[in-house]
Length: 336
Ligand SMILES: NC(=O)c1ccc[n+]([C@@H]2O[C@H](COP(=O)([O-])OP(=O)(O)OC[C@H]3O[C@@H](n4cnc5c(N)ncnc54)[C@H](O)[C@@H]3O)[C@@H](O)[C@H]2O)c1
Image (tube, rainbow, N blue to C red; front, top):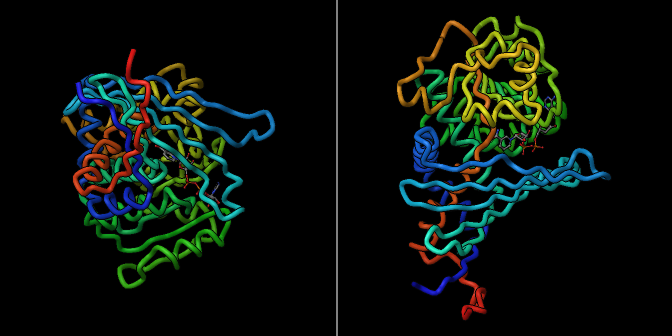
C-alpha cells in the first residue's frame, strides 16, 4: 500500500479550475445527483453547531460518500457568520477534507467556499435548464444579491444562457447596486434594480432567491400566478401555502424537508409530502415530468455528496497540473 500523503489546495487554484470549466462542473453535479438517486452515495444528516452568544451564526458539518464513478469520502465544514458581510467579508467560509476509500486516510484539504458556491450554482443552473426547458430567460430576477447569487448568475451566463433582462432586489439596495456594477455586463443585457421584492417575483420568468431570511416572508399567491421558475436556494423565503400549490422539485426529499425549510413547514401544516413532485434526478432520469401549468420551485437542501464529487474533480485537475501543495511528513507515525 502506498504511504499516505496530504495535499493542500488553495482557493486561488480552485477558483481558476472551476471558472475555466463551468460546464464541466455542471456535468459533475448531474452525475452526482444521478449517483445519489441510484443509491450509490451515503449522505447522512448535516450537523449544525450553533452558539449561545451568536444566534445567527452556525458551522455545519456535511459528511458524505460517493461510490461511483470512483469511491471517495469527505467532510465539508462550512461556517455561516452573516455579520461578516458588514465587515466586508463573505458570510460563508469552508474547508473540505477528502478521504481515501482504500485506507480511510484524509489525503487533501481544499478551500471550500468556492467549491460550495460552485456546486450550489451548478445545481441551480441544471435545475433551471430542466424546469424552463431551454437555456433562456426573458427576465431573470435575483432576490438577495450576495455571493451565491453571483455564482448562479455566472454559471447561467457561462453555460450559454440567453438572458434578456436582469432585475435585482436586495433589502440592502447598496448590495444590489454593487452586484449590477461589479458583476453584470450591461452590453450583454439590461440590468435594473427593483424597488421591492414583489416587482421581481411577480414579473420575472425565472427568479432566484439567495437571501438569508430565517423564516418565510413571501405569501401572496398573485406573485406566482404567471407560473415562473423559482430557484429557492435560500429555502425559507416562501410561505407554506405558496409551496403547497406549486410543482416542487428537491435534491433529496428527506433533507429538503428538514431544518425549518418552507417545505418542512408546509409538511407540518398539511401532514403530507405529496406536494413534492420529485427530485431533480427523477426528472433527469425521465421518471417525473415537469408541470408547466404551475409555478415550478427548486428547493435544494445542498448535499454533501456534491461537495465531495466536485472537490474530487478539482483535486484531480490540481494534481494533473501540479498545483497542489504536498505537506511533507503530515502523516508521521506510520509504524504500528
Ligand atoms: N441550498 C443550497 O444548496 C445553498 C448552498 C449555499 C448557500 N445557500 C444559501 O444561499 C443564501 C445566500 O448565501 P450568500 O452566501 O450569497 O449570502 P450573502 O450574505 O452573501 O447574501 C445574502 C443577501 O441577501 C440579502 N437579503 C437578506 N434578506 C433579504 C430579503 N428578505 N430580501 C432580499 N434580500 C435579502 C442580504 O442583504 C444579502 O445581500 C443563504 O441563505 C445560504 O444559506 C444555499
